[in-house]
Length: 190
Image 1 (tube, rainbow, N blue to C red):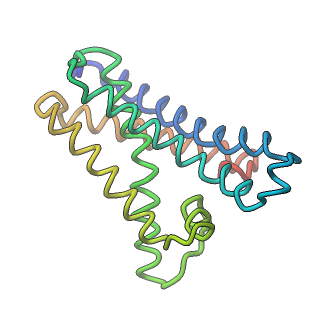
Image 2 (image 1 turned 60 degrees about the horizontal axis):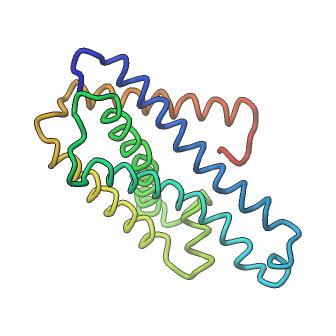
C-alpha cells in the first residue's frame, strides 16, 4: 500500500463506506419497490417482507466476500495499486457494519437484557426464527475470519499508518452517512 499517500487512503475508505452503505440501502429499496402490489406479495406476505429486509445485509456480504475473493485469489493484487487500496477499504467498510452491529448488539443485550434497536438482523431473525445473538455472532465471526485471511496474506504490506488512515476514512464516512440520514430525516438510512 502506498505509505506516502495517507490522504488517498482516507479518501478511498471514506468513499468505500459510502458506496457499501448506499448499496446496502439500494438493496432494500429495489426489491421493496418490485414486490409492492405484486401477486407474489399478496400470496406470500412473509416472503415479500423478508426479501427486501434480507437484501441489505446480503449486498453488504457480497461486497465483503467480493473484496476478499479479489484479494485472496491466486493471482496477486499489486500492493502498491489503487485497486488494492479499494479492495482493502471495501472489505473494511462492509465488515465494519457486521462488527459494529455484532458488538453493539451483544453488548446492549448483555447489559440491559433487551434489544431496543430493530435493525435488519433483528427483523430477519424474528422472521425466520433465528435468535438475534446467534445471527450477529455468526456474522461477527465470519467477518473476522475474512479480515484475518486478508491480513495474514498481506502481512507486512499493511502498516499501522495505513490502517489508521482506513479507520479514519471509515469514521468520517460513518459521520457523513449519519449526518445525511438525520439531517434530512431519512428513516431508511437511520
